[in-house]
Image 1 (cartoon, each protein chain N blue to C red):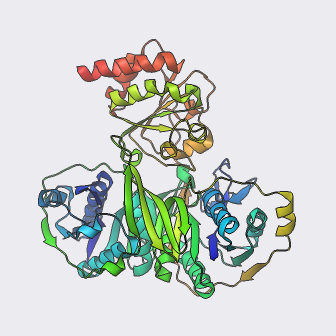
Image 2 (image 1 turned 120 degrees about the vertical axis):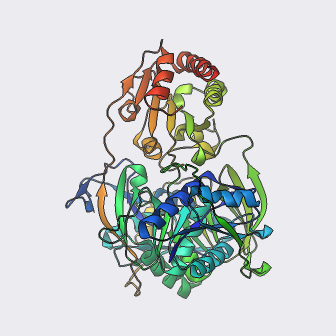
Image 3 (image 1 turned 135 degrees about the vertical axis):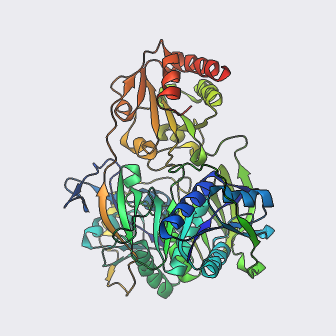
Length: 246
Length: 323
């Protein structure tokens, strides 16, 4: 069993979001970077659980510069076996998916896990694009993944419920909450991660189909209008007459 | 040239987010001087399909095949890309809901079309084809230029409300070749949360946090939700403690919602929670702590004990609705 987990570097969930260079770049000053939570807590940890229960080689891949190496080492410390970094910087999901697909085509994985989206670009596109480029089945936004031989049973979220699906491997799955319980790396894992293989490869030729022109912050709220707790009818009136939402 | 909109359905009913996508697509079509075609997969009756004309589609392609009741991304991609070719679609619009997220990236990759997922604006074609989208989990926006010839836009639900007009659409059966073997992912069971309004489609959401002290106290929140016709949600600590099911968890690592009205009860307003809700049009915060950070993100606030305020608010809403 060979599993590929796609990981991405994102700002910490508490990071202050600000931009520089005339609002064209994310301001990284003072920002802590982490493994994208969906990639780590659900995709990677589910892969590690499968490794522990049925045996699997867990490979990690990220597309990015050398500043990604810290989060890759952390993913190795959690229990990944081997990591690959495609040395390219891009915010275009097609370009990134093409890099992952080129790697996966060569390695022939049974399962490719991604997070359901990254918490920075919120693209939610990598899994589906990788699946399409490899012509593999794709199950999106999975909350549960079980294996019985080479058939996977997967719960995926739909509007107002869940679908339980069956699919034969190989498969691409995007993961969300429910897949696994978050872990923290232990000292043994951190020591072992130092010597695990991290291969840096140059990107394959691929098109970039989108580009970020600029960022903007949402307009600031006008300020809260406080209502006396003894006069809740006033709130109902405001919601109806002023805000027009009820 | 045309604009193609994937309008997803559940049990033959076109979803609200899909109606919004159709209306959005028809406005993009008008902007580009062309027409909008909606594509519906799976059984749906003719009146439901023709009604898409009210949202600006001039043509509705319908694949009635019962095997398309649920989304199979490979099969859906095959059909959507065939329809896009048949219609000469320059732009393909999806609702950015669960179905859209399952299919739009595949379609984009197949067509080598740039994808903007989570769009919140019409394209600005003054200098390229620039669409604004949510980034940093609702804490910011990015303006993305799609540079490929064909474009895929997945529209954030509840960004532009769908308003029915007087237009009409011609419904046309579409029958691309689909084999049983194409269905790689088989749905063996569907579990719906009965009677609830899906959070991502809800116009009003009432959400509770640790301030409610325990799952046994959710009754007052549910009463208010019922009075408002709202869906219920929770903060992450509540979901993690098992007080409420995980699918109700709203926030950075849970669902992102953008209802017209979000009522937060006993939620302090950590930055991760705000990320999931700050697209809401109006936010009401009820919290006994006047220092709760959520008040800074709120439009209206009540500083008070939820156990006293919420039942009173429910009564006031009932009285208002009874008028």
